[in-house]
Length: 211
Image (cartoon, rainbow, N blue to C red; front, side):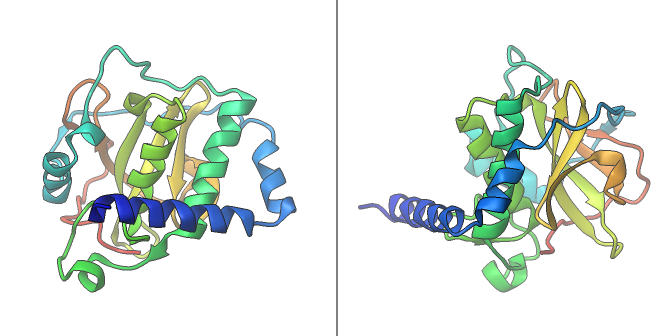
């Protein structure tokens, strides 16, 4: 068995264990009502991608592929919303949070938490991978750079939906409208090309390497 295959099987087993260990009350929360409609975040021009994102796209080209034939928005149904909430909770519970410096000895490295550990962007990239496998359009799920409550660079996953832009975050298992997160939104992946767009935030961090 190859190393990558072994790591993938290990990760899936870990996530399955975390899910089975979740209380029935917590699992029932995946059936909550759809979020209220709210305005989406507006792009205001081009932005420079992080170097760690560029390196990730070279290593995992399929995870960055842009298909303009895909929908640019997710139509939220009860089933789709349940899948989103479930995946968000499973990954937040199942992946061990660790900084890239402690994990890899690097300031910022993006990957898919294949050994069951990672920092903020690794959580979100893994969530997107699983949501794509569940049938959601990658084009409507955009990696996003923000300034968090500590004034540090942080990565979240923005889901562009017909009910507004919703954020998946490893700091909370509640999928929130972007304007309720308390973050300053800096930039995110474009829905039109393999590029990034500005969201109006002024100070752009060089890394997103925190837990």
